Amino acid sequence: MKSFELKGEIRNDFGKKAAKALRKEGLVPCVIYGGHGEGNISFVVKSSDLRGLIYTPEVFLVNLDLGEKKMMAILKDSQFHPVKENVLHIDFLHVIETAPVTIEIPVRLQGLAVGVKAGGKLSLDRRKLKVKALPAKLPQELVVNVEHLDLGKSIQVGQLNFENLELLDAKNAVVCRVQLTRAARGAAAAAAKAGK
Image (cartoon, rainbow, N blue to C red; front, side, top):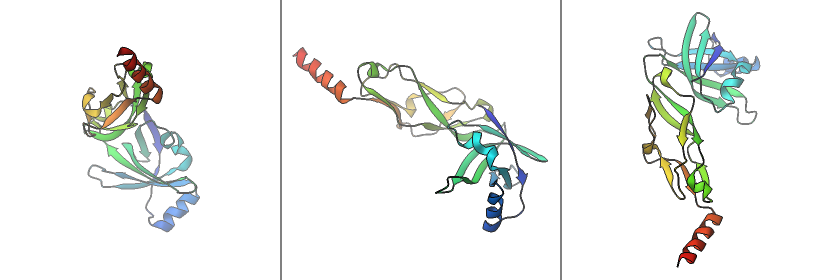
C-alpha cells in the first residue's frame, strides 16, 4: 500500500468558534483516534496538503508528523462543506504495525468476461471491500479476475480469496456481474428459436 506524508500541528483550542477561525486560515481540524494509551489527539493540517490524500480513489497509510509525535494512521472519515465542498474535518485512525487494521480497499476488475464477449454488460456492484489485515499486508487494490464470468452470472464476496487478509463484507454480497443486455437477450432468443 502507498504511503502519504502529512505534517500537522497539535491544537489545544476547541469548539466551533476555534474551528471556524482555523478554517479561515486555510487549516483543517483533525482528530486521530486510538492513540494506543495516549487517547485521541486533536491537530490541524494545511488544507492544501490534503489534495493528494482526499480527492483520489486510492487508499494510503498516512505518516503523520505532529512535531515531536510521529504516527502511522489511516483516513477514517472526512466531512465536507455541503455547498463549497471544502474539507471541514478529518478523522484518522492510529495504526501500529503489529495490530490488524480494518479498512476499505478499492476493487479493480481484470480480464474480458466470457459473458461480455457474448454481448453482456459487466457491472461493478462494489467499488470497495472492507478488509482486515496487518498494515504491511494491505494491498493498494483488490484485483478480481472476471474472464470466466458468463452471461447472467456474478462473483460474490464469499468466492474471493486474498492472501494475508480477511474480507469482512457479507459472503453473499455481489462484487460484480455480467448482465444480459437487450441485444444479448434477443440473440439468445433467436438462437433458441433456430435450435427448435
